[in-house]
Image (cartoon, rainbow, N blue to C red; front, side, top):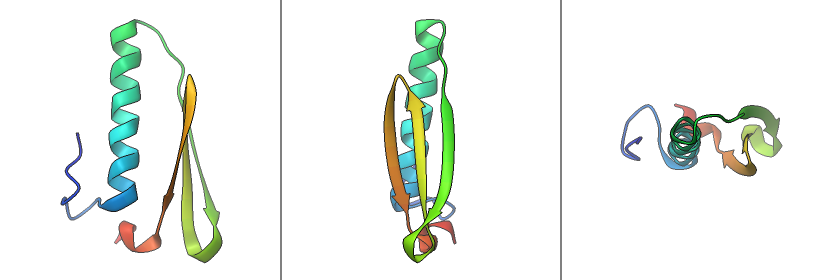
Length: 67
């Protein structure tokens, strides 16, 4: 899991990475899975990251989370 206090990743980015890790781990444990990750720029230079693996999870990541 990603620590929310890691300098490289914080806030919504850390939450998204944790969810991605969780989905991949669950898929490997299950034996097969399909996962897609998309990212797009939205209002105020935020990023919308969508993880699709059975169900969809969306995270809006402020630009300052990327510094």
